[in-house]
Length: 412
Image (tube, rainbow, N blue to C red; front, top):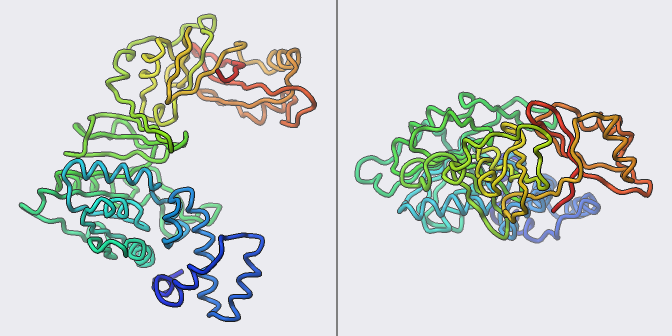
C-alpha cells in the first residue's frame, strides 16, 4: 500500500467501503473480495480487505479504537499498545507538558494518546505511507499535525517556547530493505544501529525539559545516563519495551519495572531491591526451601530480582537466574509462586525415573540459566507431550551454586 492508497482509504468511497465490511473472517475473505470487485476498483477492494485483516489483529492492542484506524503490517507490529501509550501520555501531562513532539511516530499510537490528553502534537515520520496513516489516525484531534520528515530535519522550539515542551522518540529498530525469514524488515539491536542513533536521541532529550524514548527491552543497563530513568514494561507477562525518561518526566531515577495488565499496574524500583542487594545466592541445592518464586520478566530485565528476594525474605537460586526460594508463602502480585515437590541435579536418566515413578507422562519445561535444549530433554525423557493416561509435571531447569538442577514444581 502506498501513500496514494492511504488517501483513498481515509476518505470518500474508500472509507465508506472499509467501514461497511463485516468483521474479518479468513474463511470467507476471498469470496467477499470477489463479490466486492464487481462494484469497486479491485485495487481499492484489496487494500480495504488488507485493512480489515489488520484491524482484526489490532483489536488486541487497540480494542474498539482499531475499528476507526488504518494500519501497515510493520506499523501495527511496532506500535505501542494503547494502554502503555496512555502511561507515556500521563507522564507528560503530569509534568506540565503542553506540546509534544513525537519523532518516529509510526502509525501514531503514542501521538493519539498524547492528543487524547489535549496536548498539542507534532508527529513526524520519515516514511510517506506511514506518515499518511498516522495523519488518518490523528484526524479527530485538531491540535495534532503530522509531517513526513526525518528526525534530524526537525528543529525544536527555542527559548521560552520550550517551557512546556516534551519530546518523545521511537527510533527505528529495523533495517530498511533487509528482510528476515518472514519477509519483515530485519531488527537491529545495537544502540548505534537504531535511527536516530542513541547519541542523537540523547541530544534531542537535552533540548527539552521533558523527554522520553521507546527502546528495546534489551537496552543495556550501563547505557542509562545519570539522572535518567529506564522503565521496562510488560503486558500480561510479555516484556514490550524499555522506555528511557529524562528531566521532568522522571519519577524514580535509575531502573524500574512496570508490570501491567488490564486489572492493575505494579511498579518495582531499585529502592525496593536495595535491602537484598548483598543477599548471597543459594549456597547449595540442599538449602532450597519449599517455595519457589518467579518474578515477572520486566523485573528480571530491569535487574530487580533482589526486590523479590527482599519481599519474600528469600534467596536467589543463582546469580542472575531470576528464581527465588523462600520458606514461606507470600502473595506477590508481580511474581508467580510454586511449591517445590522435588529437587535434584539435572540428570535425564534420574529425572525420567522420578517422573515415571510418580505417574507423569507429560512435562512443561521452564528454564533459565541453563543451555540444555528443552525438546532434546523431552526426547531423552521419552515424553512427547501426548498423554497416555498419566499426569503432567512442571519442570524448572536452572542453576544453583554453578550446577544445573531440575526442580519439579506445582503452582502454589
